[in-house]
Image 1 (cartoon, rainbow, N blue to C red):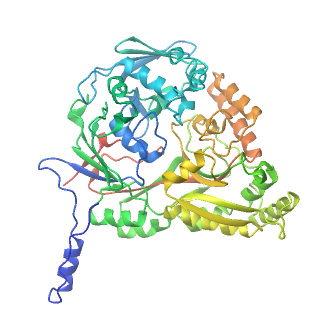
Image 2: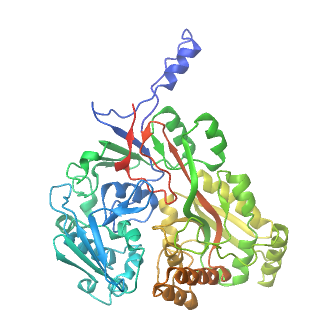
Image 3: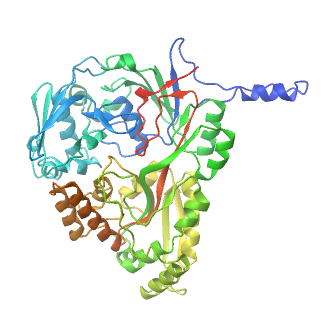
Length: 537
């Protein structure tokens, strides 16, 4: 990890000179004539395997190494990636993608068979991909993932080395959006079959994107370098990127200020006003395609199986204080789950039925509901919030703890490193979990599909309602876009009426971007592929 150059601690050195020495920074040496980016990426990746990854910070690296049929433009919208163009049948069920001439980083051609292999690998039960449900839109996808059909039954096939056909179970006009996601990425069959899951190690990793994996030092950095076999390598400015885990966002902020990092993909919300003064033009914000929320473990915690308890806890949250006073970077109180930045949705969002009540009235009602459910001052509800250990989240959890204590709930907080916390969520080893859901593609389904009964691990609270599932299925089969949006809104309202999750706030993207960086474009999904970036001297 880069550190400051040691300053000469001699009393004879003028204070100004001493300060200048302390301001000098040590960046990793960049070879002469090359351009090197130092990238703060919040957390250590658990994996760089596209078919197994889960977290946003993993996707940031994987998205620079690998490329799907489509990819992200600088503004986050889908543009041709490995596919140059595609067409669909009139009923929207069969898509044919035509692949460009492209190579893996070892020089082998990227073929349609690599996409077939990658899609089958995502759905293979042995892979245990947490994102397998995204591929249920493909014919026999769910049956394959549940072990009820062979991999060969999946509705994908290579018509020839550069033509891929995908057959769907219902129309999905958002397929170019979802095809950007890592779960749809190809996999280098010739490498995966040779090394198995060990193919992702440096020296073995083969990629088809703008960069290739050079090194991975756990706890320190992931290093990638330009892939000379990338089809558009001539227009990639950066020669090397170091991705650093930066869970301490205040420390990362200082490293950006000193020039040790060129960007960091998060900063502490309540420091936004200060950053506008100390580093003008560096702190970038904007409403995200994401929602912060709480999940209640309804599978294992009996109290949470009672809607009165879930409603009381949600009502007791002072969202206006949390967003306006505690965070202060432009976050908005959330009384719905799908954020207002989402495409293909209704203009007036569904909302929690009690959203119009004053906070004082909500507190009174929350106490009444808890008492009705059997939790009183003599027998208080006792719960633990499991949360990632970043600074922003700790402040948020302390505010929630205070809100719930105000209505008589005995609350404790259990912190863990992000990967450990999300492993606990996936394994249902928690009572209340705090998380943010960042849309995998810009459509309401990326949020609402999270809470389907068959979604699996990422439906952390195990919300289940057959009527909700039926509405989502009805929306899938609806060809009219406006009618589809209305049906999806009905589904969201049903989930909100069930208190399926407790939405907290609509997330704001918070990036620190050096003024030396060019090619950066703020966008709601917060996708920023490094192939578009460069550094000014």
